[in-house]
Length: 269
View 1 (cartoon, one colour):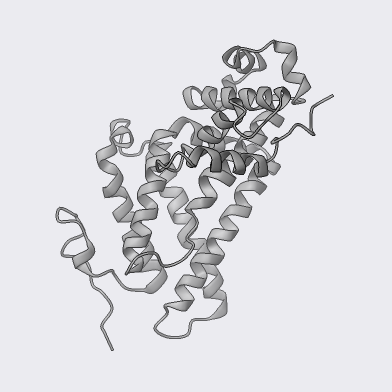
View 2 (tube, helix red, strand yellow):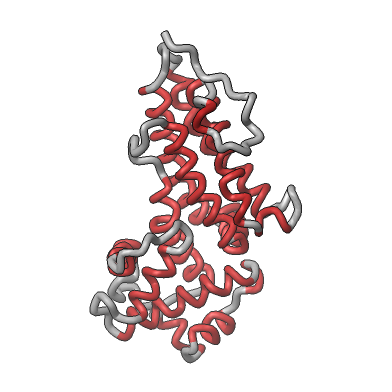
């Protein structure tokens, strides 16, 4: 019998853990927030009982295993061993490895992927906002490459895992379409209005998967943090073109950007 009513076993509980972890004042980068939230639960920072703390230990152990190795190598023994709990304890919380991984992926998506969805104009220009967001996303992909590889593997194989991802991408696409619509120089067909958000979101997903999971530029490139800004700028530049049909102001590009000389901002009317 699984402990489905364990305190803080849901993304809502993880959200409170994230708040506790963030209260220390330091900025928590995307890709690190879920771990901080689980650590807070393990310590009982929110008054969690023993059952909830053990459940959090199992999820943290699964996350660590998936960060170090692939999905196929994850077993109940590897999880309970890393969590330092008895093997039989696993079945008090989860029916199977799939249930555990699905919960970890769902909560990671809620805590470490959903916050990357644009929320509004925080910068003077949209390009700088998009680039800042992409720097966070790219950094998360770099640090958690193996975990993302497992996530994408599972979403291809499991309908429920894929549904989690599709809900996020649908939100992302809707917001991106709204940004394109709000800043359009002229009306666009309604079909294109919906399509552009999905197209720009899918492009970013695919190119980051190819760079950080499939290693199309070699194994050394995605491991080098010096490439984060370079990749983020290319992604933001491409998204700007796709959404608005124009390039950002060349003054916004970094001094050594390979895009210098190729930016053609929209003419001012």
